[in-house]
Image (cartoon, rainbow, N blue to C red; front, side, top):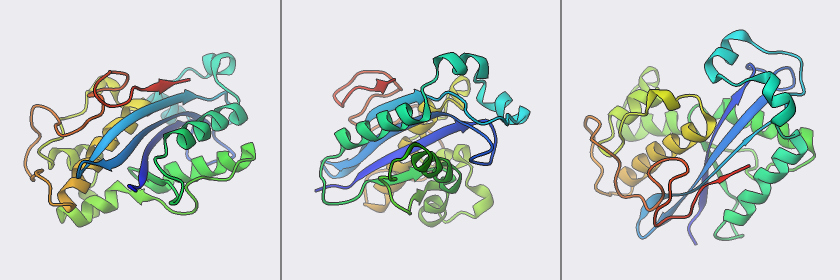
Length: 223
């Protein structure tokens, strides 16, 4: 049975869990199917802020409206419960633990696991994660300071540049990270990806080509 990978991105009100808020989470399910790592369903949810600190620089980056989230965001308990229910429903098997994947995974994982604990849930991913920055160092033979998501994507033939208007939306960033992760994993599996400049568009995925689009793969979810 293929492992289930979940590419995660999140937006926060600052860098410190318990002082700053988790504001939004996006996830994209990835697994190996028909010999290639492919993208499947997406999930996106927004949280109601519960902590007092809002870093101005962080809020400029994420472009989320804290006042709107006060009324429209889900409580941490409800939001984390929805995320964990979705992960459980997506898993193709129960033998192996699902795998957390993120670009700069320590940041995303620490907020995710903190909010699991705060909401009273175990972290389904345990105490480990795959960092696509480190994965790119090994697969592409590049130094740490060359592992920005933009640069890594430019070195993968089948990953197009990300639409600048979609940057720092957790759902869009999770899906783009999933494209990069699949390209890197398909390289390691000896698939047809090759190093080079970005091409006109991604290929070889059964999932939607953009967040919320429909295709031969499962559709996206949003709460």
